[in-house]
Length: 203
Image (tube, rainbow, N blue to C red):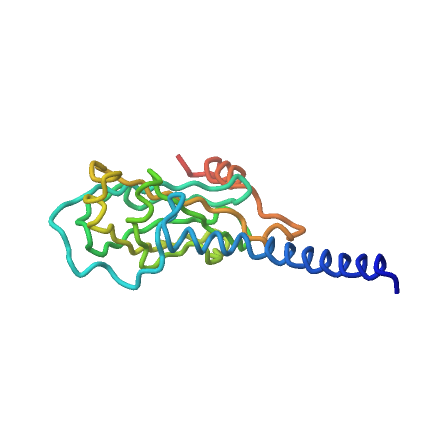
């Protein structure tokens, strides 16, 4: 085999390895980025690597507002049970979001979340929540979904966040991937609401 042929062979092998590696990285990129955000609080993602709240509970407080959104393709009504809470730094807190399936079929959704302003992300830690786990509601079913969290007392010692007065925790529910494969989608929320409004005996 000539030197040129050997060189071409080595180049072909190297390119194949490179392409295979890039494919692997592309598949891993999303979950790795998600994990990075959860551990560091980057991009307003609440931290989820904390097993329990800080032992040192501060007397200082901050307001946490709760925001809820639903993708138009998901026939749910989704809202916080409480719009805001005033919490002590370092103290574990429990809040609830309420989801109602307005369709006549069982529907599964998945929630994504973030906090605002983004710089508060590293100091907002979720102990337990319903996010990133598929939630299935039966036809007409309503459930309360808990979120347990605490705000790190260090938020008032960091120069970038020491003057913060409130944090907004926002969730958005989307149809799960399995819902997108259904051949007979559930009735829209608007259709169900109209039916309820027009039902005899309803004011």
